[in-house]
Amino acid sequence: MIVVSGIQPTGKPHLGNYLGAIRNYVKLQDEAEAQDGKCLIFLADLHAISMPHDPAQLHASTLEMVATLVACGLDPAKSVLFNQAQVPAHAELQWLLMGTARMGWLNRMTQWKDKAGKNREGQSVALFGYPVLQAADVLLYQATHVPVGEDQKQHLELARDIAQKFNNDFASDDAPVFTLPDPYIPEEAARIMSLRDGARKMSKSEPSDMSRVNLTDDAETMAEKVKKAKTDPEVLPSEGAGLAERPEARNLVGIYAALAGQSVNEVLRQYGGQGFGAFKPALADLLVSVLGPIRDRFVELKDDREALDAILARGAAQAREFSRPTLDAAYSALGLVRG
Image 1 (cartoon, helix red, strand yellow):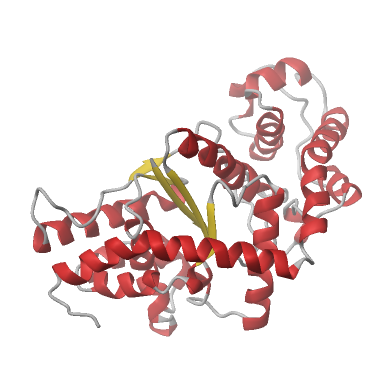
Image 2: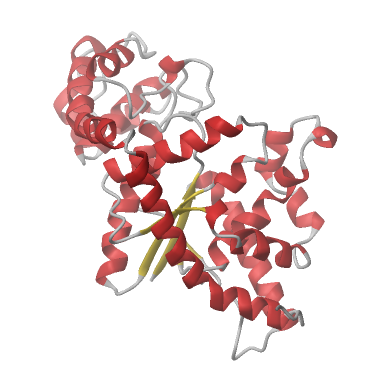
């Protein structure tokens, strides 16, 4: 079992990142270790430069994200934690795969269409080729399992298509260069929406800070954001079906369920018939109890530059070693001779 996943080190990590991805990294590292496998988690700083960015802020955010992941329970002794920029093989393999990827495949990527909008001609080539770098990220380590949300399934399918075509074109059936990675969809992969709009995913890029709970927020700020979260005037129903047309209510109940490790129906058996005046304080208390220790650990770590740099350096050295056989095989399959 080889698990590979990346997270962009831009913006402040928030509750949606934690419930949708980060806490599952912690479970996956233990699962991979139990199977004598590997878990590689990287900070996608090369991906970050596909969009306008502040170089100094990107570097600071990378270190902050390392502190966040460790505070959430990711153990550098069990997982390989690194940033892409320290492992040149990611960019090298992307270029090698550019000859296999097809324009038509990339043109169909919905995230490209969403991010480029109407000004496609004004976007960077990096943004268009972003999914090929994603393919390189996972194929480089012969990943067997890649944690994905709904918005990334298409990119993993592209990675499989690229791997399959490369193997067909340049390798033999009994000695493929790349493993075709499978999506890993955790049972508790929560999709957390904005506190201001239940139809929009909670996002680092949302202008209003009140739309999300940041993992760096203190207890008072968390409670205030929950208190002011958008709701409706109705009481909570007794079962989940009653939330179908109530996106904000469904989101808050879903957050409670994810934090408590309960089903939505279990939460509603306890709070059904009550209004948000009773439910919101309970949610705020639960949020603080779960995220409070994470924030405290983050505060301890975030300014220890030496320790954070050491974690990344150690992880990058491991990643470079793990990546070398696959990169060598790809060069060889293409008939390229390296010094």
